[in-house]
Length: 396
Image (cartoon, rainbow, N blue to C red; front, top):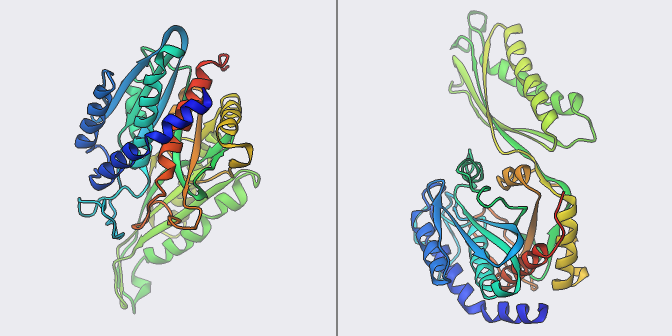
């Protein structure tokens, strides 16, 4: 079966390239994936499946095998980023300021390819494959949470869920896996420090919020350096500071934006409390007021150890053991984490860099692209992993 599946996946390469290039040229922003969803649904109907819509622009379909087996869900995200593409390629984005710079066109293409391969195998496996084409991964609250709220993990309820994501750090032919905690929670921080502005030459008559902000930006780092367990990764970063004064004008307020990320949900909640107390207390001690808004984002992404071990073993059979790489923890965030909190899951990375070094640009950059050999490999691997999981014992 393995050799047959690999050969069939390889034969799909031209079709998958055409699919991916259509999607790449026609990107849509988060929760606006109307045409993308319609395109995906049309391709699923061509396979004889019956797609339906969830969470606005999400698409779900079932591949029914023989009765008696488990339900395995497969997820691909579909949204693009607000980035102007700079590459001079024939399939360059046709939508100004919108680009598939995170590889979601690749994810969608690979899942469509896996769907075709699994549909062709439906007489040979027991169980059901649930296809999840997800909107809005790039912005809060995240399409995964909305799909779950819409009941996508019910009727039928998946025993587990797999997700695949491009990874230009790895060459085509390799994947990366990691059991347990893999990606971080993410929370957005919005601070407003209010004082009393005035002439820069008369500070005694003002209450300088810029000075308060400077103290706060430095002091806040002690939450990571002194409050967090040093064995527990945490990141507190501030990337936007607006003090709209002048050389001789102290403003009335300072506006700050940042992010807090960690790999432990309990510490996440504690850190929120520490940060709020520090912001309000430090500002008050200097006579100012600090308002802190914490927009809670995606949770930590946990790969189920048993599922991930099986994925590793199956991937080694498909690619060779030397091509399955152990990933480091990464403090970026992914809303697949919601799925990983709701069902046993494995989120793995697909190598997309060419062997000669081309296509090494990072995701979320205007020149991101892939070696399209990754498409048939990603589709075939996802189908193979699914078949192995359908035949595996239930995961606790």
